Length: 120
Image (tube, one colour):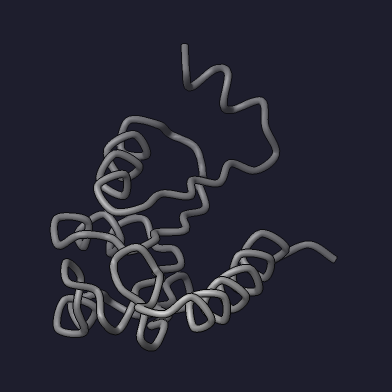
């Protein structure tokens, strides 16, 4: 039923965060349609979904759950990109509000580029 409903759309985008990145990978595995993924601050168990389905991965350099070592386990190719946000934690925030606002501004640009990708 879900397959029938979702397949009516021209494009399906999953934007997931933290443990939700596993949910997105599991759901994608059950559907037979192309899905574009934005994985925000994934967790270790998401890596095999990222490597299977590809997408954009965004995590913080001060993320206590997903670090540079885990990011290096992601297979980079034309369908996968990894962006590390300096000084951002697992919530994609910093310790001080002004720096968090700067991070938020960067993230908005990343999201807009991702969502507009492939559109004239």
